[in-house]
Length: 90
Image 1 (cartoon, one colour):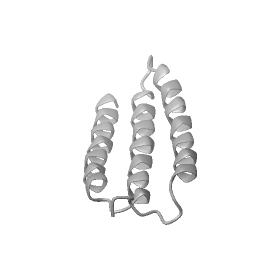
Image 2 (cartoon, one colour):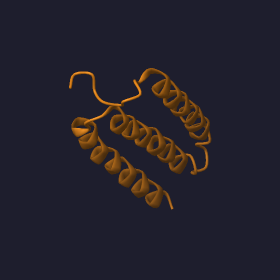
Image 3 (cartoon, one colour):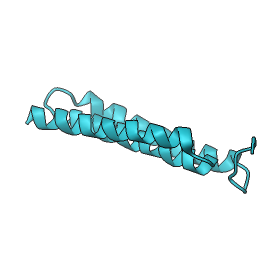
Image 4 (cartoon, one colour):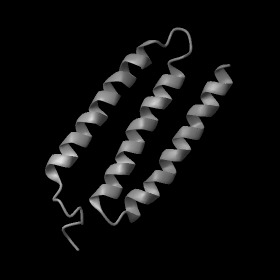
């Protein structure tokens, strides 16, 4: 079962790499924030998958902290971004 967990973690990390393309191309702040949420959600999922192995329960605690930080990041984004959602340099 350990190989399955490692395979799932690698697959999820590949999804994050694909998301990096969207960060580079994202025309608006909202696009970039959605990718940041993808990173947070995927990071939490990878930690939970790897934390399912016996003896790695501390990874579940770290995943919980990351999930809370991701929620705080969304609230900060909503408070700081102008209503139009367009980049300021455009």
